[in-house]
Length: 125
Image 1 (cartoon, rainbow, N blue to C red):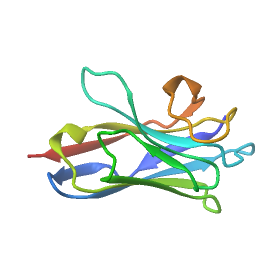
Image 2 (image 1 turned 120 degrees about the vertical axis):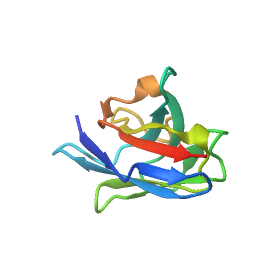
Image 3 (image 1 turned 180 degrees about the horizontal axis):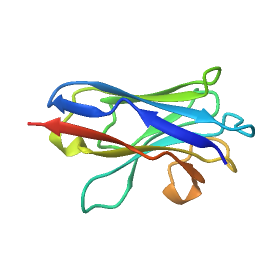
Image 4 (image 1 turned 90 degrees about the vertical axis):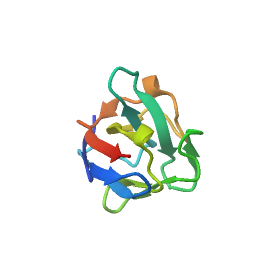
């Protein structure tokens, strides 16, 4: 399994921007599909965005479409989530994940087999 470490979270005012990073490591990490999920207090973890191995295909939750952008740099083994026009309802712990046994764009939480520890994003009104 891959080791994933998120960074870039923090406190931002509504309307602001943040860029999250997810650095992957591990001998067997071979640019699998990657995704970002989030979990707000008292709620289930939910899908945010996903990207295929090359970065040529992406998928977004309706709630973030047009505001968030997922990208990856395979040479650096890093996936990014650029978040703009942030809203208080975007407040959550954000997790990156990899789906080593699949191809394409993966949006189903249960298909991911490696997870980072999460990074807190707080959007104040």
